Image 1 (cartoon, rainbow, N blue to C red):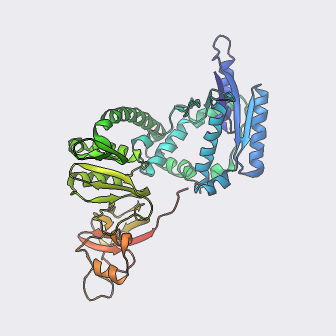
Image 2 (cartoon, helix red, strand yellow):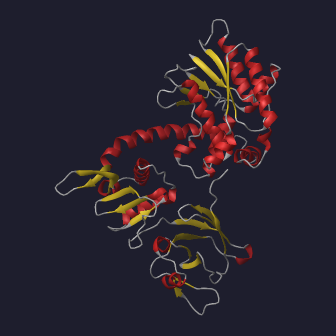
Length: 449
C-alpha cells in the first residue's frame, strides 16, 4: 500500500513518520508500505511556515522517501466562505489529501493518508464538541479510520492511543528535532484555550481526564454506529416521501413526512433520532431545542400548526403526519398559525438562540437571594402582557407591537422571555425591572472561531 504521512513538521507528525519508516524497514517485520510524506503550506505565518516546509522536505530526503507539497491561501478562503481560519485550514488540508488519493485518471499518488492525531487531540476535540452542545456523533471525536468519498482512499489515525508526552519522549531519545508552531500559543483560538487553560484546570479534579475523554469517544463512536444501523432499519417505515393523495398512495412532490402514529409509540430517544434524521434528509441539522420543539408539536400540537426553523425548514402538523419542507427566502406567511422554536434555560444561566439570532444571559445578584428557576425564550402569543418602564400598568403585547409598527413574519416571531409566569424581557422595548434578576441580550456572532 502507498501511504502518505501528513507531515507538518511538528512533533506528532515527525514521530509518526519516523515510527513508520523504522517499523517498515525492520528485518522480518516489514509492514509492506511504500511511504510518502505530504506537506501543505497554508499560506500563513510567513517565514515560519516557509521554514516548516524546508524542514519537512529535508526530513523526507534524510529518510529517503518521496515528498509532496502544495500551497493554499487559507486566510482568503476563510474570508470567502465565512469560516474561521481553523475551519478553512482543515477543509483545505483534507481536500488536498483527497487529491493525492483520488482513484481516477491520473492515477492516485497514494492509496491512503495517515495523520498524527494523538490521544491529547482526541480529548481536546471531545471537550470542544461537548462545550458546543454536540450530540452523540459529535462526542465520538476523531475517528481512527475514515473512508474518503467516491473511492478517494482512506484517512488513518494510528496515534490516537498515544499521548503527546510519549511522542516527545520518543523523539528526544533519538535526538530528532521538530518544529513548533507559534500560533499554538495564541489564546484567540478555541482549541488553544482548551489545551492551555481548560484541560489543565479540569485535570486538577481528575488527572486521568484525557484518557476518560478518549474512552468516551470510543463509546460514543460504537453506540453511534449501532444507532445509525437502527435508524436505517426504522426510517423507511416512518419517513415518507411526498404528500398523500386521495384514494391512497403519495404524490411525488418535494418534502417528506413523518408518520405520527408510529412516532408517538417510540421512546423519546428514538423520536429524537427519527426527527433529526428526517430533517437531515432536507439538508438541515437540528439542535436540541429545535428537536424538542418538533417533539412537542408531534405529541401535543394540533393540526395546522407549523414550526419554522433555521435554513428555511418548515414543519407542519396534520392529523396524521409531520410534513417537512424547505421554504424559499421570504415565503413566511403572516396569517399562518406558526409555532416558532422556543428555548428553556436555568436561571442564572445563558444560551445561544440561533432562531432569534441572539445570545441571552440571565444573572441573579448574590444579594438578591433569588432561588434557582427556569426561564423561557419564545415568540409572544395572544394574551401576553408586559409592564413597560414608566407605564401605569400592564399592556397587551399585541398593542405594543402595533405601536412599534411591527408586522408580517417579524411580528409572528417577536421574542420574549418568560420567567415565573411573567414576561421579563421583550425585544425592542424597555420593561419594568424584575427584582432579583439581570438580563443581558446581545446579537449572536455570525461565526465562532
